[in-house]
Length: 293
Length: 293
Image (cartoon, rainbow over all chains, first blue to last red; front, side, top):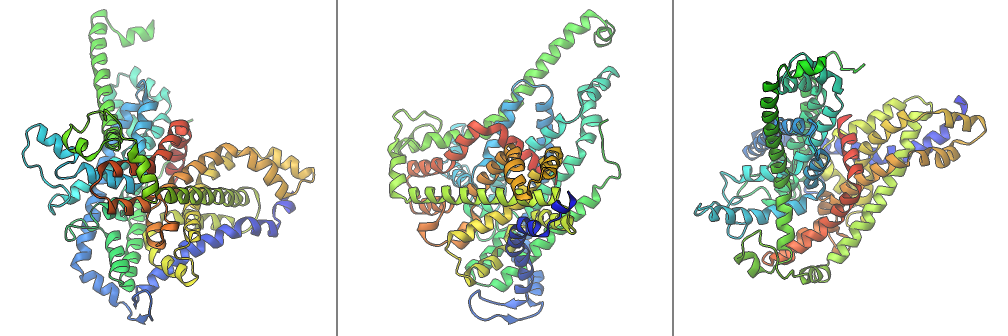
């Protein structure tokens, strides 16, 4: 049987198409990104090797650090909002009638395209006819702001639809993890006189910690490379006040035709995402894994 | 009797705590319902304004029902805005990429979990690590690679990219199922002289049909909503998909709210309808694809 199952021709036939594809579309491009970053290149003409010039310029580029700060702020907000999602998931998992329906409703925004969500929220935030300002005016707030046109609030106005889009995703993950905890543990704690808060804090939270770690990585890395809604809704504006790392990369490459510099930003983004994943995993590493038996 | 004594030491406490828990239950329910309302409200508003004309949008309260629904908004954008072309492109590109991803992903998962070969865990690792690589870091090299081989402004650039970037999550969801699948049937088939190819096509593939359906749905949602690749690689209207098409169309008709609303509704309806019928599978697929990483 081993002979049949170690037939090299069949293994090659099954694995090689996908392997070659992922090498060509994912791995070769990231090597090229690093290499392009060492060149002066407009995307069409000849490349000129400039060594680390692009990377040095990047470290001195105030616009880049500004965009990195915005990405970091988003990571912070997304990370903190996880606590809220965990609370909602705990409520959902506490034998609530209709929990299935609720978690499905929460998930809907995540299934829709970012373009549709961005266009919808552009309308919500519309200064004169948007639903937000119409409602604010109807409860007596005169002259509500033009949310996406003011550089001091635009970033936070953008965070709201981003969180809105992904809330259901995290609630769903937490709900699944909490439902995995055997009911016997909760029963035992109840008999010992623990109240609902103690059970949530001392039993459920520690047991859901593995999943919480995964979601922290997902939320932080997802925020650092975030692009979609910001690109469609403000395109980084007004005057760079909502620029994030990925949108800055896109602008440098495909608007300013500075492919070398854009690639340097792209490579930096990759390194940051991998490094942050590694650091968070290290920081939250635990030796023992939980087993229910 | 014993457990009854522990929970309710005396009758007075029972009625009091019963009231509190009922009140608490109602409060929890209110929180969950409020979150659901927040998630749904923008979409309901979108549905309403897609059926109004500008005068009704601007002068009536935002949540007033569209008294005489203007379905003509939908008919108008469907033919006038090229939306029909974009829609068909989205359909065939989504289906082609999904079918290929699921078939190729199944072949790889089969080879990794059933066949015996050196380097299988390394190859699996390559697929899993690819999940952590930000799409944006590959964008510039992919664009230049595709233009070198004449694939920019060609649907193949999208299909190849979708397959490569969705392959990791597809394999991850399939893996869990393949590991849990008993091998006895396959072993018996091999002893009876069945070839590996025939075994895969006639035994394993049909046995995994339920997880294949789950991965296919997840793939379809991702492909349908994809924006950045279409926006970067495709320039002619004939090949654009709905996400970028909607974006361009709205850019031209910024003032007609009904038309914009109808366009957005058309772009999200297929996903909403799919969700209505297949929500359990979607929930299951998203949960399976996220936590194990």
